[in-house]
Length: 238
Image 1 (cartoon, rainbow, N blue to C red):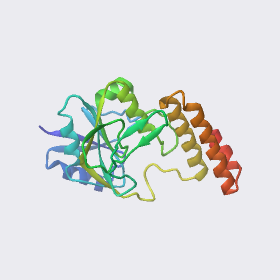
Image 2 (cartoon, rainbow, N blue to C red):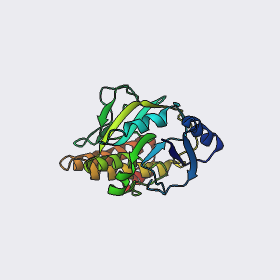
Image 3 (cartoon, rainbow, N blue to C red):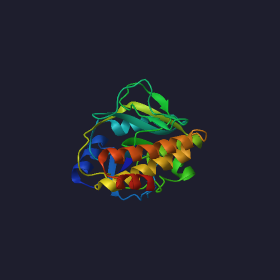
Image 4 (cartoon, rainbow, N blue to C red):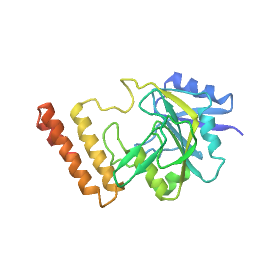
């Protein structure tokens, strides 16, 4: 059975050609623009999100698609090498009492997870129909935390998320392009904003006040070390 792939984010001819190469004649690639929530005009059963600075394995799309033969699976995350992800014992976990998000998405073992890597993840359309898209309250160009927030909301709605190491890509971590804040103060503001927003939504109530106080203290200490008190104001405003 043939599939249709909707290419999201960058209509560069090299990207279109690459994904046509994945298909072996069985997939058709189109360009379309998604809105900020990720809930765009796609009509297929599954949507796949990838970073723009990657080298994907030839069968990456296929490995994502194969996971959905299991009707219990609502979302799939693939393995990422070439950067800060490691092959740790714990992969894709979230610990609400300390607001700790564990990645380790270079792991080699298939397992159920709490969240997926934003640069290599796919979801059934049903999840978007049920819980909506990514929350635009996670602001800034990099929108830190939005994909983890989405995954945790999907989990609470009863969806099963799977980490599949065979859906592999190599992350190049290029210095330009993609979702990056250009101005340092804007980056600090939105980082502080998104971290606090994520904590208020997902952290255990008992430990949340102490965590937020610790965040405020870190902003003050960082500003003092840099000799610029205004940085503390930027962080606390966020």
